[in-house]
Length: 331
Image (cartoon, rainbow, N blue to C red; front, side):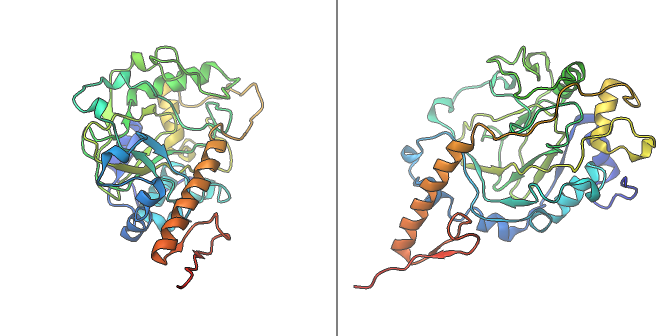
């Protein structure tokens, strides 16, 4: 069923998404979750927040220990996500139905303090989805979602996007119906699926804690350098569709805004003859082993902290979802 009444996205937001491929939902996350999911971040990292010499890694993709259903975590953003995708009935409720404390941390480095780097030269431009074969109609990565857990200023590690790069991704996938299991990489972004060196439009995503930014799944984006070294915390929860995108619907009113953006980029009303030529596949991402090691290290740090304070360790990796109480011996 297509969305016929928009309750969360204004006409201006819908048009902005169709033109630029992204939209911001301000103040969308409940304050209680912003606080709860960042309160022990320095314990988990093993760093001193007041001593930058302990910040030995510039960027860290932390594992998840706690989670809540997405619609409870950020109700207005969830509503907007469903409207962009054509309705909640198109969303797969069995995959990635929750948001958690898998924070993506950018602490910066003194190396970048006084340097100016052109956005196109950041070097890690990509689209998300390292666990499935990408096709023009793939539904595994319905949207790219960025949740801000703290205020992010310019030059403080915000994500960069290249809205005019969507056409490069769409054209590449249109011309390659065999799909791509791994997004082609190259150091300067001139030959990859994003073809960033041909892009002219770059946007630095800044905002306030609780803002949620929704990107078209084909939006090229890149981490930036945190020149100011103000700790930056975001998450990037996926949302998956039950079925692939349908780029040849019998009723044009049934197209989602995500589908319409693809069709308008190609300058067509539908794709009646386009079909994939290889099997759809899902696989374990390359980062899984490293994430498992991080889970073990973080749990040990949380347990050590709990032994000192008498507090509990709240992690799904200890005795399931029930918080694990560390018992401190007397005497």
